Image (cartoon, rainbow, N blue to C red; front, side, top):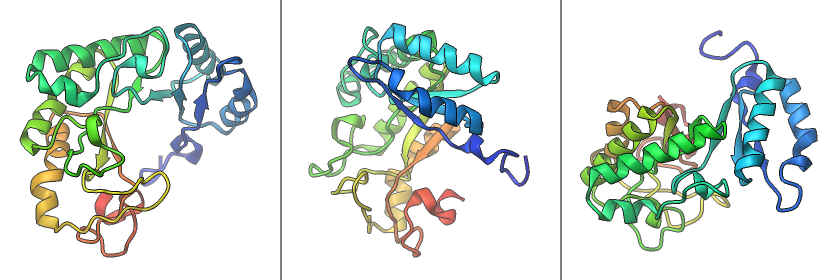
Amino acid sequence: MTNGVPANPARLIMPALRSQALSGFAHEAGRIADTLGLGVGGYIIFGGTVESVRKLTADLLRRAGRPLLLASDLERGAGQQVAGLTEFPPPMALASLRDPAVLRWAASVTAQEARAVGINWIFAPVADLDLLPENPIVQTRAFGADPKEVAACVRHWVEGCQGAGALACVKHYPGHGRTTVDSHVTLPVVDAPAKALRTTDLLPFTTAIASGVASIMTAHVAYPALDSSGLPATLSRTVLG
């Protein structure tokens, strides 16, 4: 490790592996062979069944001969991606029950089921605020609109998840709740003042960090008040620093 960069930069790469209805992960054989040869740090897994995902993760670890980060988007439980596991209602529905025990339980079940099929890094919870009805990204993926209430939900989810043995990842820093376009297809620009962002959007992330969250996913969104360069948070040394 030199200046925070691993000796093999490929460790920073996590290719996606996507299951297909008929072939499972068989069509990914070439990609897996190539990327294991490069020495990637892990994979993000989309789809599959309990059997196919468990076989995939075991095979990846055996062939790599070293630990891997094996991740998946599991905001609604492990069943969101892996057929046969538990899928929960959206986070906003869980938060509406106003019962911390429910959030911790859902996060714990998600972590336990994920670990049972070899997934050790969960890309959840969403720490964004549901601020705009026209937002195409957040909506019911968020716990709500109130920063303090969302922060509390994030804390319960992170602690429930990590207490059950999986890494949590809050997203999408520094907040995706003020966007009106899809960041998967274009670059949203949020013009909110820095003070507003720090006192609202950032609060759930601050709480997650205080709760010991293992990781944070950035937003591919530009925030001129935080970085005048126009770069999205994902590439902004100012925002990331």
